[in-house]
Length: 405
Image (tube, rainbow, N blue to C red; front, side, top):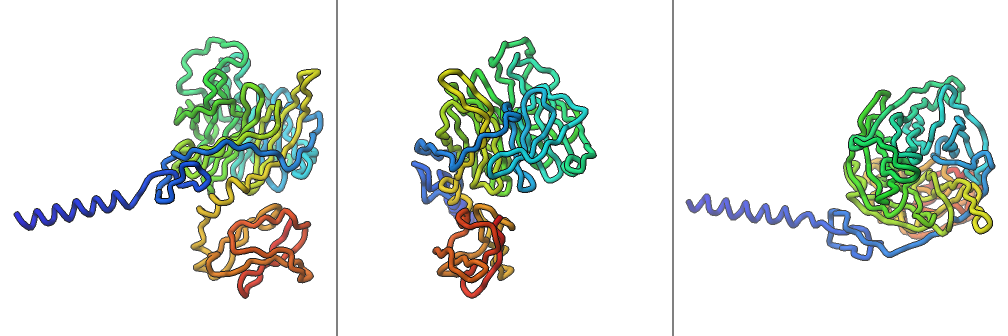
């Protein structure tokens, strides 16, 4: 009996230790309720209100007056209109000028509202449903990327309905919670973020991303207090950024990050207002997770408001750099004894996958040997001040080359 009693006490102590090993709480230092002792993020972070302004804004061609979706691919932005026009347009990332027009022949644009991508395909969401809330032909077009640029289009269709929409009685204009203007593609699935005109929430629905006809399954819902119109996903960084606006056409973005298993609303949820009053923002894209592009369609309420279609560039490094540094995996660089500089080539930021504790300074030199930058060790460096060219980064006794575009 005595031996069993000792074993029982030991088991209780062990269980108590395991329970104490993981402390749930807010793990984001930018939050008001940050808990430095927390080891597991429980999604409880609360943030101060914040508003940011674009670093630059560029008026786009009248051809894009109803620009809706936006993605970044092949060092270029891609967009489309949301009514009748069946073209994809490639855009210059510096000023939003149209570089090319790619007709998606054999299709019809009932209400194209967003565009997403994976390694091999573009996905165009023909699922706008705000006119009466009762469409029965919701679909996503899947377009092979190589076939588009080589002018030998390969297109197929993903048809779907919402698993919880049972009543298809017309609701009238802008009066349904079964509208959608934002989605992402990940793994073998597509995730829809609905635009809910009545509740001002957004719901996440999941369906396969292969051709077929499906019932999109409801996963979760969250009170956005606005209308969601675009989404972009950085899977490696566990970050989704949504864009939208409220009833007064005040644009905002929502940062969803540090979540697990595609439970997008289980991690940090931070709303950021954009200083662009009366702008109907529609699309959002990014190349590196710190610099973002947001588009708005033409909105005119004469004589007081006249905001044509524009491309806005935002810098979110002050909000996300710390998070990226915390999640960055440096194990590979430690074992290889080398640096990893990402991306290559780079435009605005470079990520250094190194152990910053091993070096006292990081310096950037021009190809001619002039010192251009010197800082204490950090994993993300702003290189937007550099002109395009070849540069060398020095940390300790080692030099590495990178290209700025």
